[in-house]
Amino acid sequence: MPEKSTSIDRRDIPIPLNIPSVAGWKEIPIAPEQLGEDAYLVPLGAFSNHPRIFTDSIYSGERDNSPYRQDQNLVDPQRLPGSLTTMFVRPSVAEALEKAQALLPRNHFLIIHDAYRTLQIQGALYEKYYSELQKLHPDWTEEQLTTEAQKFVSLPSSDPAKPSPHNTGGAVDLAIIRVPDEQAQRISEIEEEIKDLPDTDLHRYDLEMEMTTIKSHGAYLYFGTPFDHGGEKASSTYFEQLAQERPLTDEENEALRNRRLLYHIMKDVGLQAYPDEWWHFNSPKSQMGAKTAGLETANFGRIALSAENLEHEKIRQQHRLGVLRIQDGWRPRHRRSFLDRALGRNKDPLGKARQAVEKSLRRDGNYAQTSLPNSEEISPQAN
Image (cartoon, rainbow, N blue to C red):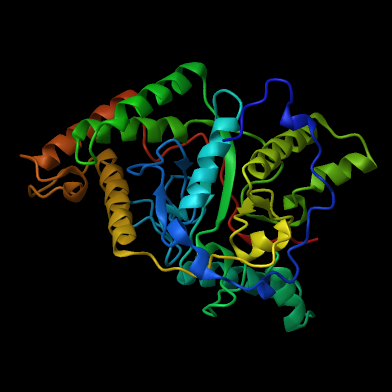
């Protein structure tokens, strides 16, 4: 595992202006027979084996200020079809993220906004971006529109030889948050407690709730644009190039340094930067990652969610909706718990689950409310 450095601040190391291009990445051949333990997807975040890797599902409308949240009455806050609450990745990607987390400065944590995508949501994102780009540039040809759109959203592909990067489980979109000393210490304590608790333990559920809320109220590092900004400022090297043209403002310099931190942390654990989006990184086992890493073959092809993945996602969605409804004053008319599957068939599971949620609300505040800045609803920027 990479070691933390006490002498080198990654924020002082420039991002190379010549980050390898992804041009031609679809031509990299895939050798799936070499997958080994990477032949499946694993969840990140709450109720997973990677609780320290915080997640924040923008596309499913998990938090109250998501631009994709459709229904403020909590009937169904999901907006984009096919979006997931759970962030799924290949096991080697999860391991790399754990290593990256260990390299971050004190009190800093990764937060994953997007990882595995179904073809359904990939198609929804692409069609949205393409149609808005077409309105901005009615004189462009289809080739021009497709080329520009794919800088920010890959064309959904059912071709097993040319899968969309996020559909392989080998791509992640992420940023960094910072929490106060006391909360960082509490996260460490929770991690130790969770280690020995089974998934069905109510106390584990309470601890997961607490850690989720700590994440929601973390301070997001400033990167110069929101997540999903669809313009040139999203480029990993935008502020590096700007600094060569003129002195940066204090705000611009802060964005420069934070992008450097994220870039070098990911690079040090083997994840490859995507030049057009500061938040996007690829496994070298994916086609796009293999291309920028200079490899001749990739291992990750398209992959579908397993029955176990679907069960985990169902638990996460039931958890989210149940907690939001309890916050809104909802009380059940029957005894069956929305957390039955997660907490086991305890005596009066719903009453105990509700008590755990209410305890967390009193202690930590609203689950859906957040101090994290809003992302942008993905769309092209007018010049």
